[in-house]
Length: 93
Image (tube, rainbow, N blue to C red):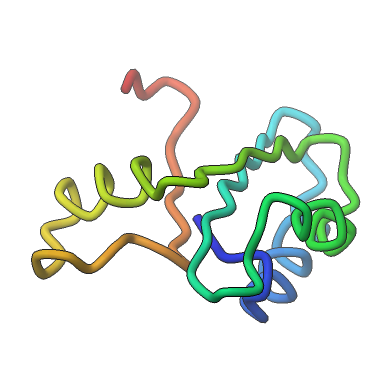
């Protein structure tokens, strides 16, 4: 989960392109963290991850980020953003 304005995507891009396995999937969830983070800004942010294995989602209300904040036991009110979670393909969730 990241904001469209986040610079953290540059690291994600390097990581995704470094992994050549075609079975790897990346799910990027954008959410509004700054006033400039709008659904309309997502297509520009998507250009930072030009890989067909990447799927993009918009969490305009921050619900997904709040749900993961609880799972990760973050302080109350702090959304989970600029986080990277890795799962083995056999994991069910």
